[in-house]
Length: 76
Image 1 (cartoon, one colour):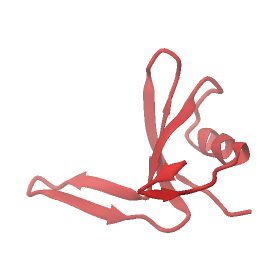
Image 2 (cartoon, one colour):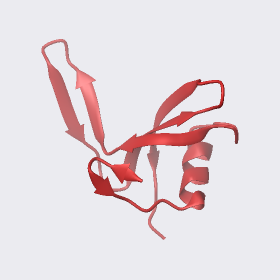
Image 3 (spheres, one colour):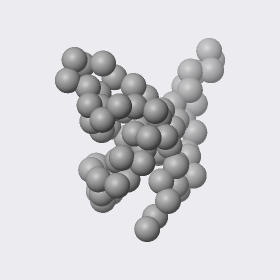
C-alpha cells in the first residue's frame, strides 16, 4: 500500500488488527492510510507527524460508509 508516498507492506493480519482496534466489522476494507495527522487550528492547517507505529486509517464498506481512526501496528 502507498502511504505518504512510500510503499508499505501490510499483511492481512495488520489490516485485521487495525479493523479490530477501531471496532469495525469484517465488511469494512482498508482504503487509505497516513502517518500524518492534519489538524485545522482555526489559524491554518497543522500537519502533525505520528510515531513510526501509528497510522490514521480509513476503512469503507460496500455501502460507501467510511470510518477513520488512529491505530498502532507492531512490526512482526
